[in-house]
Structure formats: structure tokens, C-alpha cells
Image (cartoon, rainbow, N blue to C red; front, side, top):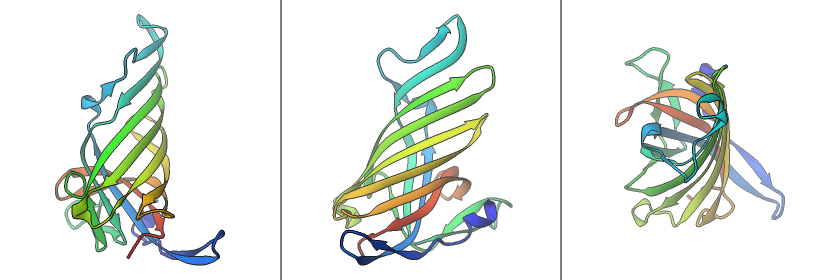
Length: 195
């Protein structure tokens, strides 16, 4: 899986409604969530069968990010600093706070005995004027695992200038980021990004 992370994902797809070709290129998101800073919705967390006898924990929170970057057209290359970790090379990188805002909500189920967890996250990346993009990415992620590691898939579509943009990615381990240190990556393709 790590070797696949270093391979750029480039190709074309056929847009069925207009029969026009859309260029696809790599999509890499560098994500630094702040789980301790997440804000629970009223009434959460919920415990089953009870708070004093926790077997399953349900949660719903407003997601808080310490950092988030979206790279279009780059590739992951082996880090020269830490073996087995990757860095982004090339492409265009958009940074949360400068180029876009982030808003997300996550739902989770955690099985206390096994440590298995399941998350779903709905989030919006809204681009700011400084980015040169007028639009947003509406994204949805499903994540699952046991202990601190997991798997996941993300998909989304664009609005505004990004109308017709489609994103598909997977949770692909760790990347060494110059601003965030070790961070999570979502790696996949984006089709129809404006040039």
C-alpha cells in the first residue's frame, strides 16, 4: 500500500451527460485533526448499555482541525528524513485559513471491548478569494479501524467554479508535512479541476 502512495494517479474519464473528456489528476489532502478540541453536540456522547457500564460509545461532534492542506496534481515521494513516510512533491497546494475554510461534523461508534471504531464525516472545504477558486468541495468520508490506525474512503463533488468536479480518495497513512509534522493523508483523484 505504501508503494502505491508514491504513484501519481493520472488519467481521463468520460463525462456521461456531455460526452466530454475531463482531465483527472492526483488529489492529496494532508489532515491534522484536533480530536481533543472537537465539540460534542448536545446529548453526546451516548453510552450503551449505560455510562457506568460502557460497551458501545456513540458520538457526534463538530470537527476541529489544527491544519488541512489540499494538493492538486502533486505526488507523494519518500521522505529523506523518516523512512517509510512520504512528502508531497509538485502540484498546487491550498492551505486552510489562507486559501479555504473547513467545516465538518463527525459521527462515531466505538466498541470498547474490541477497540473497533467506525466514523462518518461530512465536511465542506470553501475556497477563499486568495485561492483563485470560487467554489467549494462537499465531501463525505467513511473511516473504520481498530486501535490508532484505520482505513477509509472519501468522495465529494464541487460547487461554483468547481461544479462538475469529482473527488475520490482513500485514507493512505502518514505524511511528513513541514507545517504539521506527521499528519494523515487522503490520496486519490480529482477530475475536472479548473486550470
